[in-house]
Amino acid sequence: MLDSTLRFVRDGYLFGTRGFRAAGSDRFRTRLLGRPVLVLRGADAARFFYEGGRFARDGAMPRSVLTLLQDEGSVQSLEGEAHRRRKELFLGLLSGPSGGALVQRFRDDFLRAAASAGTGEVVLLDLAHDVLTEAVCAWAGLPDAVSDDLRRSGVLAGMVDAAGTVGPENWAARVRRSRAERLLAAAVRAQRERRSAPGDSALAVVSAYVEPSAAGSTAPLPAEVAAVELLNLLRPVVAVGRYVVFSALALHRHPGWREAIAAGDDSAAHWFAQEVRRFYPFFPVIGGRATRDLDWSGERVRKGDWVLLDLYGTTHDPAIWEQPDRFLPQRFDGLVVEPNTLIPQGGGDYQADHRCPGEPVTVELVEAAIRMLTRELEYDVPEQDLRVSLRTFPARPRSGFLVSGMRAKQPAAA
Image 1 (cartoon, rainbow, N blue to C red):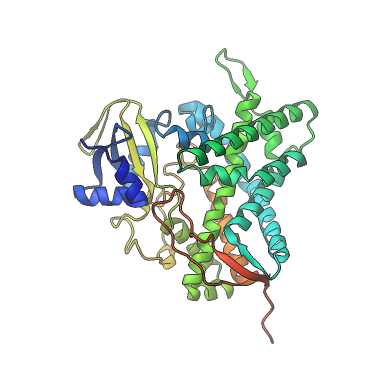
Image 2 (cartoon, one colour):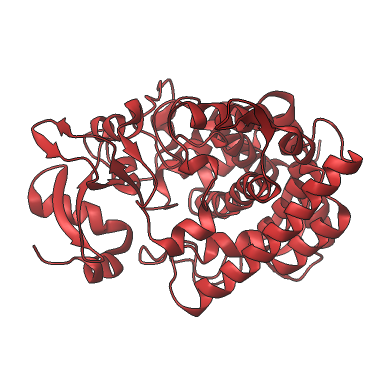
């Protein structure tokens, strides 16, 4: 079996799609990085992959990716009851009033940053990253010195940007991440001593969180693990900056939708946000190792086998989505989304499986950005390179989406 690593680099997000087409199937076997792997797509494949504890994340992704996006001991690396318990911590912080407070903070900070941008050109991706970093650090209750360091270093956005790279860029991001972990671990220790952060903040909740130890007693997370989990709250929020920019790009290319949302159609704003998440590339695949011998539709998977689920291929699967390569927000009008079809942030159940617990607040953040960009702000889009390369992980418009003259939208004349 030939190794397909170079083809993966060449094809990028379309690696799976082209492999499925060549195989005439929604599955194919190949080698990546010298290791045999089964690649799958589709709703049934997502259900098989995410539900029932069939696949573990340990050893399923390259170290260069794992270190920046998950790390050892984090909730993503846990399975079974340990994963379920730790997941409750995230669900509590990212839903309900706490999640709503994060969205409101982002909205306030974004409008303030837009007002400060002046008449010059601004790279919207950089602005979104800066605002989301400021908002999530304040929401998390981090000490000012730690928040300032994370903002100045750009470490949270850098971890996302470098996740698909190898070599010096990836190494530098890992060094910056290590520093961020040390700062957050020190903040956890200080919080446990002084309890200075608000009791409902992420810093306070994560610092106070306890779970059963191997001896049967309960104990707080080691400060180093608590720091990793804080990063797993902070970094994904900053990653939403890409959806903000893709939303701006889609509004620029589909002015009819901009007008409908600007006129106050909240349903259109929701459909638009969901279609941005479906249509535009985020992360291409997710990997798992079989926890036991399995059979999926006649495909034998042995314990320990490496399986990749094609996230991008599933959100563009013609068996699920009509005209999948067209941007059509109206497809969500009245659509009840099955958990394993729209999976840019994972499939299955939020609590029991490895679906991202921050997905609902991600949708709210994207909707908030769409409403601001259409109803509250005006700006010009100068000539630039807006192409989105499907060979770059994670993808972005090449220019980062330049805007100029950002200003508050003037009310229509009576």
